[in-house]
Length: 153
Image (cartoon, rainbow, N blue to C red; front, top):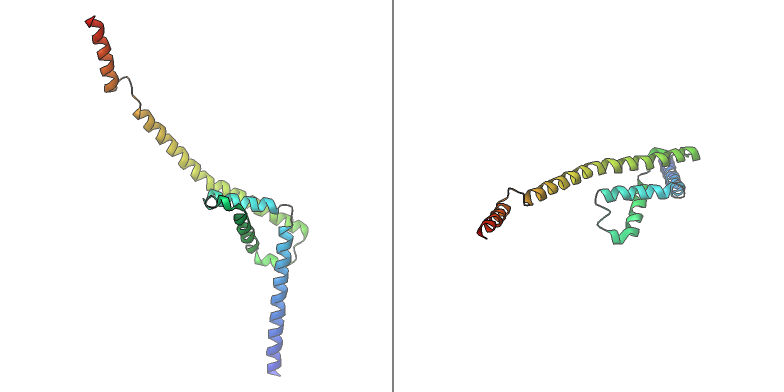
């Protein structure tokens, strides 16, 4: 009798696990066929580009897209996969995910833009310092030579 119970528990657990896998696959299919899915993948790739990850394999953009799609499909919230999302819940999820990725990209870009602005400012200052001015010795010598030549004639 006890062995029978244990056997039934194992069968029930396996059956429950299979249902969860089926739910996951169904949810992944619904997400990948959603109208916002392409935008979701694009936003994900844009985040990778900001981080410099997407730039390494520019020639390999199809591979990067597949990796992003896989990454997105594996990050599905497990609590959502066990329940059936209705269309409006899925719409909200997709809109929220797209929005979160856009905000993440902006947050990642801000320090980069500040760094670039700082570097450009420093470059400009160095360029200004390297330019000859009216007080630089070379200009002073050239002016003195011109003035002296006026008096020689």
